Length: 325
View 1 (cartoon, rainbow, N blue to C red):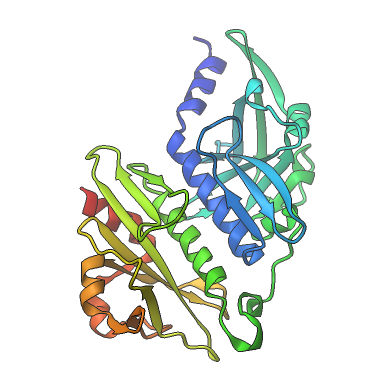
View 2 (view 1 turned 90 degrees about the vertical axis):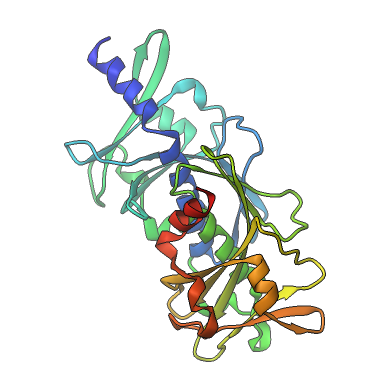
């Protein structure tokens, strides 16, 4: 094999896991930056796109392909190589990014497929047409890709949504929109779990039970069902209670609950979360009419009698993997 063939084969092996991590990081950033105005739909079958972004403000659906790499070339560039035949929708957006630790790379390439095909380098290998893009992690460059590079913190703007003020996650008259905050928590948990290649993630359709995310370990074949709750807080609204509807909450040895903390003022998640067996939740929570209620200390690393269940958010995937191992 020549050097180009070896390079392309190595790119193909670099890897499905990196691609999945890149996808969930992109989904998480779009949801976070848009305050929920951008919703993500994930396909049940791979037919050429990785997801569809639904812009709620005008109802537009935007098909998306995400390509990720885990390291830069010696020249400090991100190299993305794909087959020309994988581009099947000229209007779909291609997002190419570096996976830099627990974040996306500083700059993200966002371009429609027809533009990518036009600007990419073309190489024929064993009768197949391969397209390659190479871009740097900086603004203001002069390469042909520079006009399509977006700072990772402005990714949602490329989808026509400006970052909302922190208060936009609250419902009118001071009430808290737990639906929007809860959706942020679900996407954040999925993003964290996607960092572990040994975990296969499944979503229920429709969502009618305690388990919102099913995790399967690819080696042990064990399953863990997860329900995620998000406790949002700020100086004016210290939400210190998490509610579970008694009629739909079914405790089981294979089901755990993840409780994240969301700081509305800073628009970020707390460093720690709770990872609790659902049977413990059923025992510790206080019955209150149709609810089971857990008392928390918002904005604090200490959760009273719940400290035994605390884990770092950045180690959530590792903690879940250990349970399944």
